[in-house]
Image 1 (spheres, helix red, strand yellow):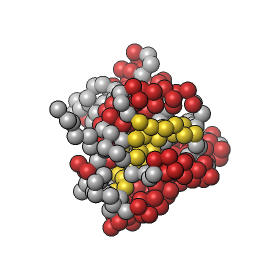
Image 2 (cartoon, rainbow, N blue to C red):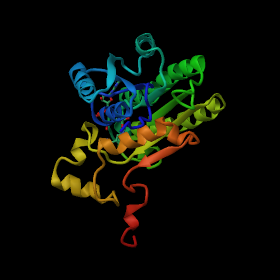
Image 3 (cartoon, helix red, strand yellow):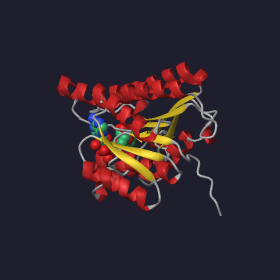
Length: 269
Ligand code: NAD
């Protein structure tokens, strides 16, 4: 029986897709028929492995090296994608990292580094994506929208995080960047939403789940009593990128096992 693939023939760029959530999202979009650009900054082997997995299941894609905080490299990544696949329909702004420090010890370099990738990177990629969405407009055979952007935010766009001021500030910034461009381009049928992951098992936070002690501490923050997996985010990204969410614009979809439910009150506080 022919299955309906929700993203058939659409072109997606996923930044930071050589590991963790980005790799999971790239595979989930490809499984729904999208051709996926697997962006990476430093690990060509890992990016190629993700592409091989996609091809092994009948999918299609391309790996492109670009540092999302570098304007020239981002512009070139979009040019390369458009010359290879013809256009871009979906951008997943996933690349991000942490450089943790107590606030009074945080260097300007640590601050600028995190903001440069986590926030300016999303600005640069979104700007190039929106230029292409506006140029092309809606192609009804592919999607009701002229383009879709999914920003990888975090529960830390709303939960303050001591020792991570640069990271939380970057995600708070992503929230307002996402809402503002959603408002600005909704009339042109461009949709911009975020995913706010809770704790997902990836290299970024291995210290929080690699030992039983750390894992049990982490579970105190998660009413669902399990850590999230990249697949949990993949499903949310497919929904936000597909016409199933065509009337959804400017929201953060939290995928966090209930982390935002004030779990400290579970036993009456
Ligand atoms: P990860 O470290 O596996 O993935 C981050 C990816 O970004 C890596 O592939 C890395 O190479 C890439 N990257 C870093 N700097 C880059 C740059 N300058 N240009 C291009 N790519 C770059 O970690 P992850 O958990 O998969 O993180 C993905 C996103 O999810 C991040 O934005 C992170 O803030 C967010 N997030 C993760 C969690 C979690 O619990 N894992 C929770 C909330 C939000």
